[in-house]
Image (cartoon, rainbow, N blue to C red; front, side, top):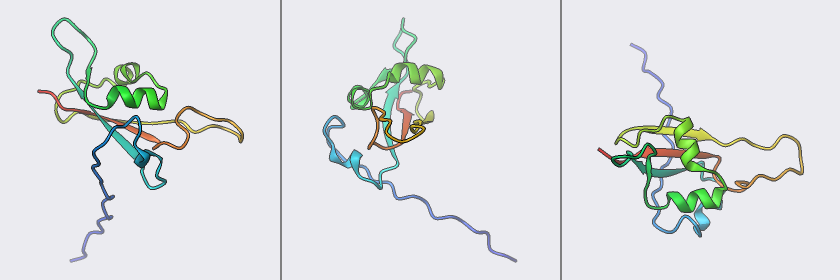
Length: 111
């Protein structure tokens, strides 16, 4: 019976610190940043940012609330959505997230 080929899993590193100032995000081997969000509170429709999410929005220069809405993020535990940031076309163009991980993962942490 042939053995199935299982690709190696990527290395996952969890690091404490402030997203606003972490040098880890500029490391060339960091592929994604995972940001926690919770379900909307009563009377609201937007998911609720959790620790580091607002700082990441400022550092990346993106509206994460709009991104969460477009990805239909619920904030419920286990709901995970990945957004691949676009790269510039042509040389000499800069984007606010240049030098940062090219993927933002919004991970639900609520009930």
